[in-house]
Image 1: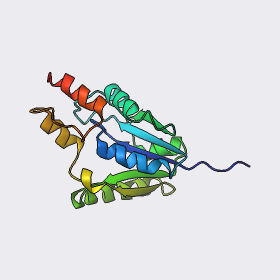
Image 2: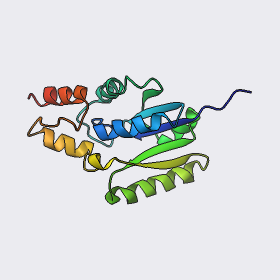
Image 3: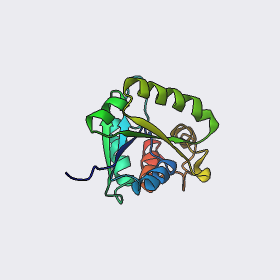
Image 4: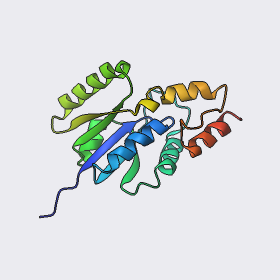
Length: 163
């Protein structure tokens, strides 16, 4: 019988993927044989980038990481994790303000499937203030986002806002 593969998923809207996300993903690569970055696509949310654009930007930003794949899903994250037999959902935590939401989500996922664990990875302090929402808000007025998003994302933002 072969050795079990360590699988995890890292879900989010990634609208857009930031260097904070990339930092967390790079730190996870050595811990998991397979890491799936899961692009959430909810009809309840309004996105700057389409699901296909977000998927492309994530793939381009992570192409140097061969054990990382990018997928899209519009249902429950815990159901996707079960479908690919990934026993771990990774969530990033930037600040204490994120904690209550993440705890509620982890508890709901545990209720839905008690065989799937949610693990929290803390953001590097240099990215503690960087969020996709903040990037989008700033991008309306300036394209000075160097160091906060991958270059491919910076170019896509500039194109989106005609900068």
